[in-house]
Length: 163
Image (tube, rainbow, N blue to C red; front, top):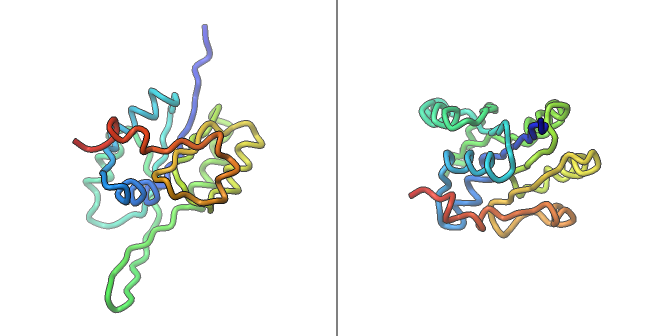
């Protein structure tokens, strides 16, 4: 009997969401989860997201789609003009990718953020890196040396956009 492949995905939700929006479309998260399973044999998809009170409906939806949501406390930053909510998930994503390493064959990282350079480099050294899915054409130059792993989500726009 063939061994079942167990790949895990680690998603920077803010980078994904803003990157796709900047390209003029909205991601269908349910379709994206199916895509990850079908294309990359992703068994578990960890979605790192800032927790905002009142967004429980969104979080429940994402969990029903099959994501394991890892919540980060958020900060409200007010510069007098604009109120911004910040929930930087980078450290949590790196930590979980390393903690879970014994449980997966390969990892898919969804982000174009150069802060993940050290993680990507480590995963490659450990022969654990499958793909880096970047959400738009502009991603960190720190990731360029990993170009053989990079796939742009824009290639799958018609399959993954909200209808």
